[in-house]
Length: 389
Image 1: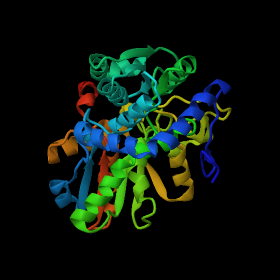
Image 2: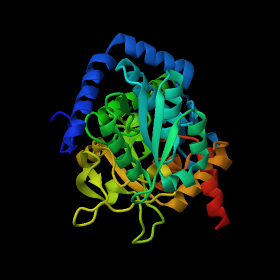
Image 3: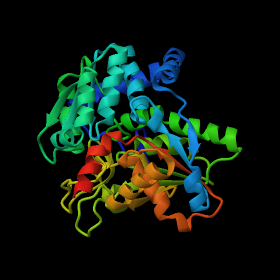
Image 4: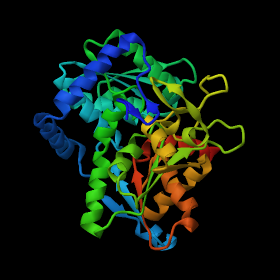
């Protein structure tokens, strides 16, 4: 496999001015992240600050109804309420070891921005977060959290005013400030080495889950399910199970409202191969290569591309990807609230909804693991607005 590629996907399609910081980052990963000092410090922060390991828990009420065991990997219980903190703490620690003083981030749902601001605060770094103006409105609660943590939030007014445009703005800022700034990319997207870096840090999810299942059940789950936007929570739980061929890996994308011509974020299911944000991957584009608008009721899934390793897993057949629509995700959201006493993020609700929608095709007695990647208090305004019509 070529360096920086997963089969035909990946690479480093960037302006010449971005090559030096990417090369510097790759070198730091090799020289710093593989060393005992960094990993000892990271494990300590994961334990004492993030609250790892996060538990797995069985949904007893739903399992009884479904006829198979439904388990959750509780990333919603990590500090800040989502899996994003795993990546930002690791990248913030790497930034300190590289001698830089500022963390730069983009965010859609706001969780990555909150997690980056949190990591910057605890490790003594400055923080700047670019966020689409539409997402600033949809996620005002998280904007306030970022500002309380000391971050400067920069609303992006261009394009669709969502995650894609926030990434573009953040990359432009990094080009101008690369000497003292590290770009803390929030998912397994972008140019090499970011997909590897983020996967490496998020794989703690799957490593823990694998050990927890062996310790408690003396077996692995039959199916592992995770929502996919950029794809970091899914890659984090998928990768440690990749060699376990009896474990079915299912990624769940956002299908939007479900009408034939609606905007959606089902990149792997309905997209085509191309280059976006420095990497070759599946993306939503017109016949002449223009990026199409994306949509999801879950802001963190509202992205017209996906991580290149997911594209490879799709084409190789190791993972399969399916679509859940807004109304199905909302039903999954309400179901977990009322059946199990857990309020899930709308992103995670897509993964749960896939299980509920496919209950008839899942063998009785199976063990299904859903990565509950975040908690849903950030989404209550969105849900209230939908309820109000």
